[in-house]
Length: 228
Image (cartoon, helix red, strand yellow):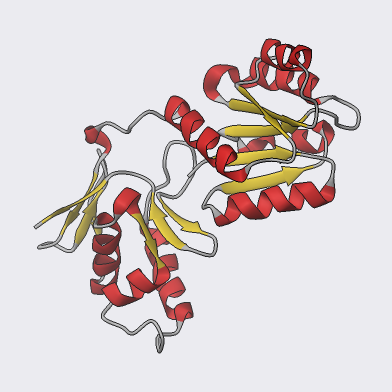
């Protein structure tokens, strides 16, 4: 999952991009100009998708400013209908990592985000693995005190630890609780997840390690292992 900010003044295209990336499990904020972006930079994005033609400050000017502010710690992608080589060169010189031509191919966009995320967030070392101590019903963060878990919280974390990339849909988590997804009230799952999230210390970037994936389920965004 990446934190993505979209700067696009066409409301229809902005909403389409926002909805697609949220559904794909990313944390997304969308604004219409550089002025609006400045009001939300506490969001600290991993990746910025910048329209080339924006009101006021252009996408190229915005890319230059963001690169100066964040250095190589942010991924910059220009999104535009312009396809001339000279435009690509201008964007590269402004610090853009890549360039997408409208209409956007969403499969290409997701692949680009994945590649940028690998560069920006290399694999977390094993020293940062969170350990689930089943016998003690505890979650042990790296270099932090153990967190007592209820029986349901233990089951939820074990289910997340046993899935690829720490991601699990709601039905998987409901079954981990020994319930039938058809009959179980999903609000009860959300209440259990909410209580668990309140117990967890925030990461160095201010995020909770247990994240919701809109329309899908939940993800534990740090390595998670079960110790019996």
